[in-house]
Structure formats: C-alpha cells, structure tokens
Amino acid sequence: MGAFLAKFRWLFSSQFWVLIGAACLSGAMSDGARADLKLCNATPGRVGVALGYQDKKGWAIEGWWNIPSQTCESLLKGTLPSRYLYVHAVDYERGGEWSGTHFMCTKDQSFTIRGTKGCEERGFSRKGFYEIDTGTSQSWTIRLADPEKTTKAK
Image (tube, rainbow, N blue to C red):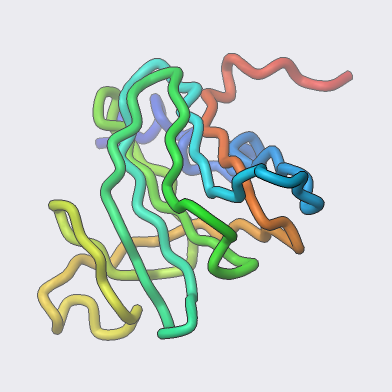
C-alpha cells in the first residue's frame, strides 16, 4: 500500500487540485450560448466522476460519469445549480482518487442521492469531495490533468 501511495501521491496533493481548477467560461453569455457544467479528462486513462451540489430541494449527489481519456463531457446542462460544486473522481486505470474534505454519499453503481447525512445508515458509502467555487459564473469547465504534464510557471 505504501508503494501505491508513493506512486500516486500527486492525486492526493493540494497542488493537484489547483491543476484541476477550472477554466471558467464567461458569466456574460451571448444569445444562443448554452450554460453547462463540463468536465474535461486530460489524463491518459478513463476516470469516474461523482458530483455534489445544492439545488432548490437541498443536497444532490450524482455519479458516476465515465469520462474517457482526452475528452470532455457535460455533467449538468443549463445554468449551474449553485455557486459551490463538489467533485470526487476515480482513476479507473492507474488507481487513486481525487477527493477532499467535504463528505457526501456515493454508491458503486450509477446513482442520484438526496442528502449528505447518515450515508452508511442509508446503505451508501461516505466519500470526500473537493469544493469548487464557481463565483458568479453561469457555466464552468473542470479540467482533470496529470501534474507531470503541466508546465510550471517561472
């Protein structure tokens, strides 16, 4: 297990989350433009993504979107449901996961879950999600990238 953590420690680092930090699309949308939440997988393997957010009915957690390598997919269509979005992702091919300190419910197969409390008591798993602040944007793109492939600013 120690070798696994050493090999994929970048998946768990705060620097990594800066790398997935997102390219925000303009809040001022032109006529006919669509507001969506997109996720682009710039890693060499397929990833699974779960998303948490608050809407008018309370907390909603949805998953799993399977995003092939080097592709983008709309996770939510239309205007973002809230300013703060929460992401948990799994690298299916190399192992490891992108997680954070905001805990929400998930399950192994495709799901939509309401509420973040009592996950285990309700038959779900409890996973850490990473928070994304979209500010006042109406659409947002999250980019998952390997830190080794990113050029550092000098």
